[in-house]
Length: 387
Ligand SMILES: Cc1cc2nc3c(=O)[nH]c(=O)nc-3n(C[C@H](O)[C@H](O)[C@H](O)COP(=O)(O)OP(=O)(O)OC[C@H]3O[C@@H](n4cnc5c(N)ncnc54)[C@H](O)[C@@H]3O)c2cc1C
Image 1 (cartoon, rainbow, N blue to C red):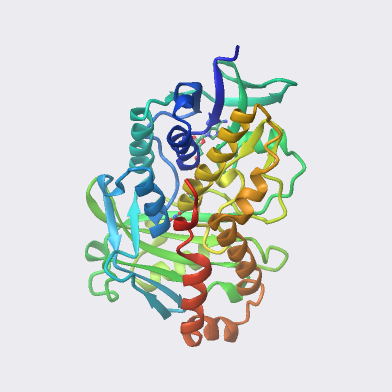
Image 2 (cartoon, rainbow, N blue to C red; image 1 turned 45 degrees about the vertical axis):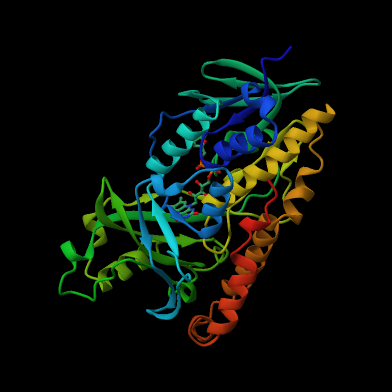
């Protein structure tokens, strides 16, 4: 008999959420699940750490209170073109909660262990081999076997490369930098931005199909800012400036010099509706399938993927049938699948129509329409995820 029914490869939000949902809907599986994580918590993860309400809804339904994690609450979010545009403020609560991923993932891993699930740290997965009656996972610490394997190993993960080597991949380029707060750097040089989050789409006419962000954050309790630039790569066939240029320009406008800080980059794989998401005995969750193409938002999505995957896994084990063939339709018809499809569709419109006048129209003049579309298609999907 196999020692584990389910091996989860990767202990980020998607892997941990899959385990937590599984143990909630099928408690008898708790000690039949093993998570393999190549790093040791608290491990660094390049990410701005912006949590939207849907992430908090999913965590709350798992009985978890993310306010236990050090955070900064952004009271409003601005969606601008060249400094002017739409301001969104959630009624009666923060608009975005900003965490540091080393702290958030460590907290979630602790909660997962408290729920009785084993996590083995410092184990790097090298290869995945599907057999007739099981899956073998080869790692630097030896081989593991299970009925089902969950690829939760992120945008650069090995699982997808092993089981779906020919599936198309859509990858965004992302750069991020952490700076001191305005009061320390930019006093007198620009109007300080305090507890609000900013997204500015001014780079789109220059063929950078994305935006520059500026979030409030904290590092070891000290107020800081997190800046970055996101490019879906949808305009990669056209001439573009270096990705760091719009970030440097925006920071300079606010009194910061990008060259004074350490710039880091990491890709984000984004969702395409026609991509396969599983093969018999192996399914993918989180960035291994794809994050939101419009913003590169992926933490709430990762948590949502976990809920949907858990249901497919528990039913497969109950029926002793491991094709995982219903996972894709579960995903597509869920609140998560609907918002991912809508965001994929929106990205195909707002980025390739890159003319300046269109971007001005969108972010400055069509406010009621943009807010309505965001309310219906971008937000409020977490409540529709079945646990
Ligand atoms: C610069 C940047 C900024 C971002 N900002 C935001 C934001 O503000 N808000 C938001 O919602 N999203 C943001 N994202 C996206 C978000 O970080 C991801 O969508 C999210 O982390 C996906 O979670 P995941 O669990 O699928 O993957 P990950 O968080 O990448 O976790 C994968 C885990 O698998 C482990 N792993 C990888 N390979 C192996 C292996 N071979 N063996 C064992 N373990 C392995 C890794 O160590 C890691 O712990 C940002 C991303 C980037 C790059």
